[in-house]
Image 1 (cartoon, rainbow, N blue to C red):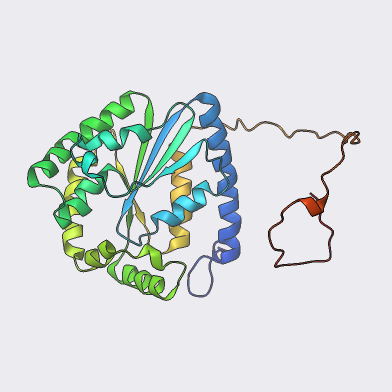
Image 2: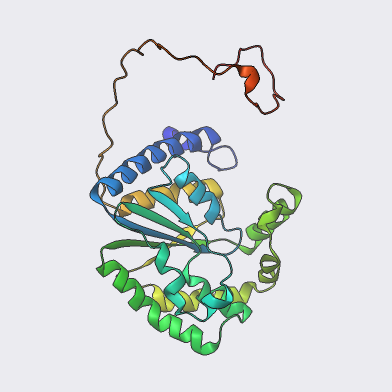
Length: 277
């Protein structure tokens, strides 16, 4: 009981000290997962979907923070071009699928058609229903090809979303996250709820299930998602053993270019240490 209580503050929230410690532990496991994917030439896709401000980006940032971007990469596509609008719907996503030894995190994905495109009228009824029919088959093909596909839906309350929208307005470093589309979606809460329910009814399959994340509390959502991701893939610890560094050999025959002949950026944060190299 005492150990359980030590994780939370008097308001029932995770303590920052416990959160940071647990996040570090999970990030070490993510490095092990990364090495296993690279060595075993595995192919992994993780899809992050949910309402605006649900915390998808925050989780993705914590997942990738300590990882190699050559192995684990994020795909966040913008609005389709006029050319892409004429293509087979899934075509613009196919080039971003993983090769052997890669994990791809989709910050929104082909499910745009079942969400924003459906609610905002950016696709026709025929295009929408064709997507719902085709999507399970498309994902079945990916899985049969050897790709591990994991799908997360971040669930957030209307009150918490509004709180995060207001916080973004006040923070100049986060204001860019609020787009005109976000503001429109703010007035279409019920429409998005209906679209989400319909999407899940067609695409939450035994072969490719949706995992719902309770995302009202950011820290808990991040830890829960990373823990679940790690438990969903049967990886092994294949991280290489520590390398022993021998003594440096003395430098001979090298004369450095005079500092006066190099162009340095302005030193706005000066200290008393000498410039090294």
